[in-house]
Image 1: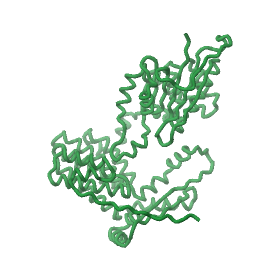
Image 2 (image 1 turned 180 degrees about the vertical axis):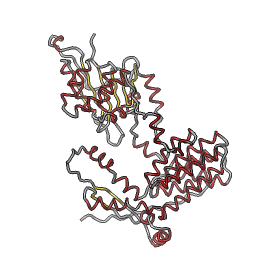
Image 3 (image 1 turned 45 degrees about the horizontal axis):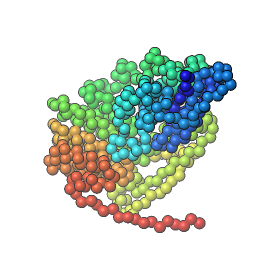
Image 4 (image 1 turned 90 degrees about the vertical axis):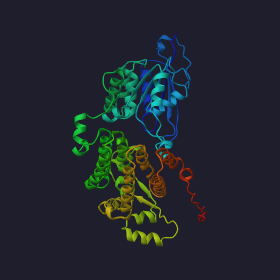
Length: 491
């Protein structure tokens, strides 16, 4: 008995899931197969995907004698032939809800990640452990085709939906041939050449004719790494190379050299005991992030980059040559202004500033005046070394590195190195991170063992108010007053 081919596509905004569904419908229609589809919109900001459900009856109408099959508008767990996901955790959601079954379903998914809001908002490393998805895909599907489709799409200058379509066809699970799929892409008339290239890449990868990864040749990678970094132990080398690139982009080559000098000093301390090289690697990781702390200069630098402006145009769907109005929302306060001053004037300003002052700004960066204002802020990078924030951060960084070195050898050093993750963000988040790290370092000076340091570090990451950390280190919670501000009536 012929049964419908049931296809569920889980995609996110801007990935062309609707277009992919249209291609499937067109290919089925051209083959004279009865077809029906529906879609359920998701939620923005990676809290949910838009799902597209397509049922295709794989027999031409000419063979049905005037009868029409009854097709469903909703997917039924255990009754799906194809589940296609444009991101790995979306594939995990489909498995979790029972849409993927080991006796029927072919699962096709991209292995890259688009992090959810809850992952980004976590104070620590909130990333989901994707090993669970890989294990579940192998156990719960009849066949799993997992590829880095985003890498293939970028390599071919297209959108991920074309690669996903090609992978579905290359896996041999669609009820029509490759020519029908390519004809559907041509019929759409949009970015046909690049879409066909992406389709071919996905087809070859799923069919096993090509690799799906987008890794650089080892020789090219080696040439891009400075000789001083190539001499570092393997456990540290890749992290240090990224750190050199990041710190150089943040400030200049001298700053990158300072980062590398600090890493090399840490590595030399760990060479006597290879087991301590993990502490050196974690120090190198969080050192790079801390040295590139966020200030208004960095914000302006990132907002004025060409690739950022190109990405904004792509996200809003602006065509080439089409005017785009872009407004940046800024809210600098006393601390942000004082951070740019030398230590003396910064102390003077903070001592005389009363209350919390923030000035909201709506800056039109699509205008010459607005864009030049950001460029002027970006141009302050050469004076960053003379600012109060720079000097404060560098002094605290040295204290942290010294504490890690003093804890060698042993697991205490690793815990202190991992505590560098407490310092992040800007404003009150940054100040809270500094206080948390200071509490952990004080605990280390008191001779606490690795278990106690780990408990304090995890407590600091557990809640933003610092209640659990206060209990872990035995300090009194600082009360925070509740301020009620009367809003002015709107005329």
